Length: 308
Length: 250
Image 1 (cartoon, one colour):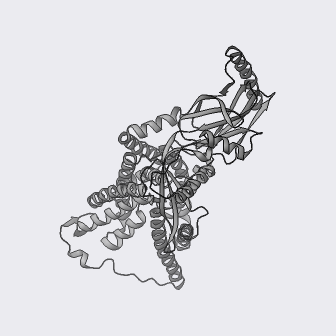
Image 2: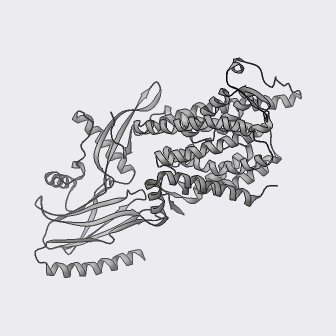
Image 3: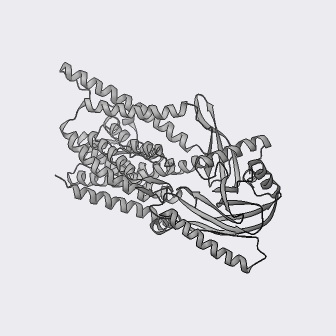
């Protein structure tokens, strides 16, 4: 069944979109990841322009993160103070990101920027995850586990504007979460991702937050950042396709349920290594597209004047 | 079924056209489309219109359907430190969003080209001047690329469409519109050609527009972008919350 998307202005198969939402939802349920970093490249791959893909995926992430936030809030596993500081940074970063996005779109470099960012981040995270799960597999075979220090004191702890974060049991400079929030917000706007894959490790390893509040707090920040991205993309670029976001959501809700159910039974490094392989595969595909000579060197962009 | 309807419509229209043509004896050319508005609704996946008409003198018929004009930028990739990036660009003014040429069989490609050029109406002689200052060869290279991209998207026809002629006076042709057809006012011009010169012309109105939900969402997003942004956030939040409730928390 073909469906005409009003903002993307193309006709796509509804079942393809539902399947895409379901498949990626399944993966996010299985591995407990956001899925934005797989969805945006997939949308671009099926022919939706990068601008619409990034903006509509941000819109869909509003829907997927809200239930998580409510659940964590009830369990009191959200550090609202930390979340708010991260969010302040996130709003600054994502607003800047939407502005950069608009600028690059006019210069015709938006596709390149998205590809490059994805290659760098997917490559780095995929290899880290791959190495980590490989190590975990080997360690479990040997049967011994060694733990590092939870957090170490570095130059970052000497920064001014110290703040007490009671729930996270931290007394650190507000500049650190502000910077991390801004960086993740920037990526959210430029890549159409929630940024959990950067946020969570940054909270654990850079800020030294206890793991029980990490998931809830990062989801809290992500919810508001993707809402901000959705608003600004809609306002400055008119690229948010509500219909596309809702169909993807419908697919992903079902996928996430199945994924979570299966993930609860069979978890562990063996599965994480599969996700790592998938991430590296996506990265490889994007990298090849950049390296291989395109079949037509020319491309066409409509509705924008100027040029050099 | 569709063929039958189309044929019935065709016959009926021909009768009507002949009746009108009979009254206005001076006209050598009368033509019309099976539909004057293409409606893009939720299930739109492209469509095909029938253009038909009647001519009273011997000669050839040329049909040009041209979509709303817009600015466009053609970019050329080159390899910069191993990566293919957009490095060069030429901007064009007044690029038709859609372009379809059809002609009667007797008119060979070269003859058609000649007619179009001499009368200033044809495919390769579109009024697409580059707005970027550039030498002619480079402009031509980028213009060729523009046409190629448009053909690849199905928005320009690669080969001239066929116009069938019956009894040396009735003619008909199908004009296909892909799903990604741009919206706006279209120009449909029909030319009657004799000995290489246009002897009669007629225009048919045509517009392409979104209708129903597609139109409302599009207009909402473009006319009130701030409100639309808030709406998008709220509807996603509600849908996400609703889905969460539906599947329940254990």
